[in-house]
Image (cartoon, rainbow, N blue to C red; front, side, top):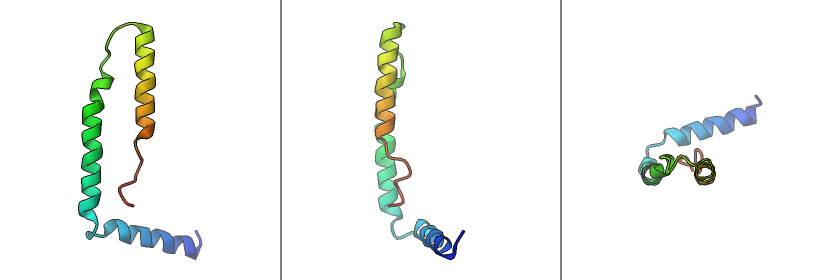
Length: 74
């Protein structure tokens, strides 16, 4: 790892540890958790029909791909 990469990682770590922007990060995380909670009904099988299950799986996959990953540190 070069010195520039080390410095970038060090700055990112300091930003992560910063309490100054903790409240907005927690608010965003809570908002995302509420969306997940509301969407959990999609995980319950509506029927035992294979085509219905496949359609439900596709919707869940699309929904899962829409949620950001590790965006709480921005």
